[in-house]
Structure formats: C-alpha cells, structure tokens
Image 1 (tube, rainbow, N blue to C red):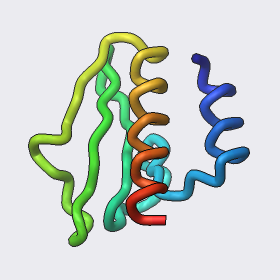
Image 2 (tube, rainbow, N blue to C red):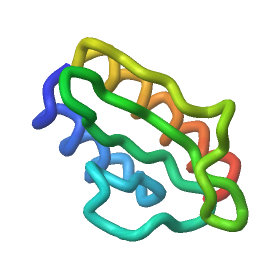
Image 3 (tube, helix red, strand yellow):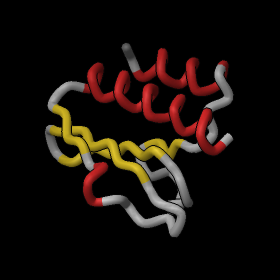
Length: 81
C-alpha cells in the first residue's frame, strides 16, 4: 500500500479521525501517524487528546504502517463515527 493508496482510502471511506503526519493538533479519539528518522509510528489518542502510551506502534516499513493505520482508522470510524 502506498501513500497515494492510503489517501484514496481515507477520502473514499470518509475516514476523518486521522492525524496525517502531524498536519493538525492532536484531537480526541484519533489515529495518528508520524515519522521519526527511519521508522514510522502509529498512535491513538484518548478522549482528552493525549497519546495513549500502550497504543504506540513502530514500523520500519511504510507499507505495513499504512495498512495498520487504515485498520485502526476503520475501527475508529465504527466506534466513534
């Protein structure tokens, strides 16, 4: 899965609770992605817009990162709308 694929899925499925490479400030119940040197990080925020410690997952491959991000975003849409 490429970055372009992810952006298409986000748009087509109307996945709104995503913080894409920290383009926005943290908000409640988001899935976020960021890059730190040679690794990608996916995280979840709680109802107070704090990153949940146990939710931080690091990847060394952007494809796996994007797949995980989409899975979490789909789950969040079901749970939080």
